[in-house]
Length: 305
Image (cartoon, rainbow, N blue to C red):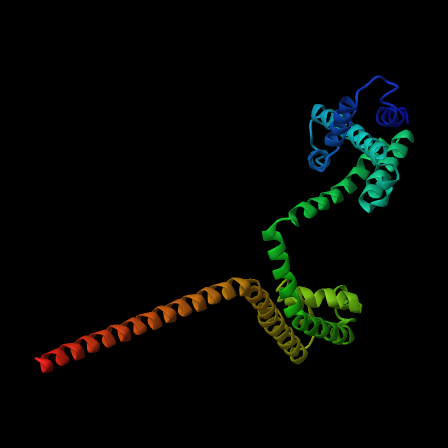
């Protein structure tokens, strides 16, 4: 609170403090630069690395103490960041969802630390990793990122029908599997959600032979053969052809823009070649006409002689 009062006085009562407008502006610029997106991103990355290292249980005691110290330093910086931004932007600070999220984390950490649960407060800092998504806004200004995002959107729309068809197929198979195999293998087909998860495993070729072998061991020869046949069909048509078809569709759409550029360049070259041929043909015709005119003039002169 004292820091906020000081910051407000710096911005609104500079004349009373005997400071010039240039000095006040430079201090405000320095405060803004100290909580800029670049500095905050570096702090978030560093704090995320600290949290990552703190999760190793076999660290030396000295290393753990250093990590706790670094975590406390980042704790102070994030409080400082929130205080500076509130002092600079006032009510406008709370109009952004990202700022509200940051401020809520600061409050939760302070409350948890005051309650003597600093370890829990440190755990809350894991949520700060979500702030790394702010870097996406910086990447979104890059032309290559916008082009790639546009390609992904087009590819997703192009494969939407295939994805919906695969989803309906998985849902249907999950219902059928639950009806026939719920009692024989409740771990994989005990309810429709488990069956959906199992079918997705089969489609991605995960456990495609272990699950039917487990079922076949508890069935008679005929039923075991049918079960293996059904699971083989799921793997072939869903896992091999289905996933491959979706992958090829997405790949084609991602490369379609580049292919179109190449085709446009080839069309432009063809037009240029056609223009050169027309120009050459016109020049040849003009030269032929000039030659014929010269020959005619020469013949006229010979006749006159």
